[in-house]
Image (tube, rainbow, N blue to C red; front, side, top):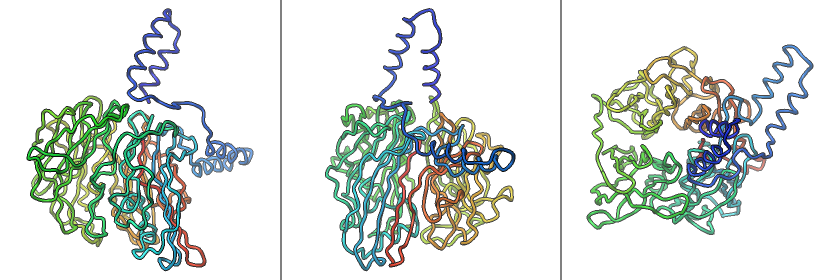
Length: 529
């Protein structure tokens, strides 16, 4: 965290006044919204020790030694130098299915937090236990698509977030919305919780939201609408949707805030009227410490997705509720994904054009329309990509970090992605200097680009993150660039230029015993700071 480094330097630099040091120390204490546990405290790091031992065994010199040491680094779970990660939080879901649904099934979940290169710490765990037959073959489905975020329909961990300074994690536990109650663990206590990044200080903040994180028809999930809490830039407050009374005295989805330090639900900041059609609130984000933005999503009702019916801003005290005049370009519709940079907001958003895309993967319930990345800054709208493809960012937008925007796409602008696999790209905020940062390949199976896939389809990328303080770029993927993810889903990190690629998680993925018993272990949802 650059600001912390500068303050630490100021506190330790020689000065003529010890009083100045005390004043600065007091100011630092006042600036921290939530007590920080651990910080840079020493911790056990298995990956660091393994890296040392691996390099120690390399030959004495020359090219062979250099290649050996490089291989050791690639195989390490430690983040590369220059791509320091602060806090990685993720849910691990493990299930087994004897004889693919014919016998006893088991499922378990745990929340894991990793600080930097410290060993991961399990914060809360619901161990696996036999739950009887799985007539819906959910474990087989998770193992086939191998994306951990899909487990929200049967899991107890729902919304989560890492605080901006990486000092703690907020998460939600409930099984109220499980589509498969017989398979879902029973938590001893439901609600929203906070824990420090070192696993200490677990405490309950308040009740869980009464709104699910996904949209489903029957037992099929079509949209995951709100996996992550919005967190204020100062780390004091989270925002989320929950049921509340509107101005018409009817109960419907509203935006709430909650104070992390006290656990007091500070304010119902909206008082929306009951809509005529099923509507969800998403795209929730803080534009600054006192201003929230969100969008209304009207469910289509047929599984074909949602329509953004409006973008709004509101102060955290409930005042200044306004609709944002977002004007779509001709033939397009904007899907807002807001990010915060400094004291102002910039948004890297996806614009969907109702024109046939150059690529068309046959994907049920997905229209083959063009998606492009745009940058919204104040009243300026700038088109960043012109790929003409149907899966650029997969409507998730990009991440603005400094003067660059990071996103995922299956384009091949340089001839370096002939298989049209999903890759991580970056581009300047002025639309220049496009770079392909990853070289992921899966030549054995047909590609579906950045769409979710099954076992007979090539690997993909699900989400991209950037730590704006350290510069580390993270992404979640089903690919196996380092030979440690043969059939799974893992979190990766790298430097902003694509070098120093490391696999940060090491779950089992999908494995089948000789007797036909299936084992699946996947991380997700994953949150990176």
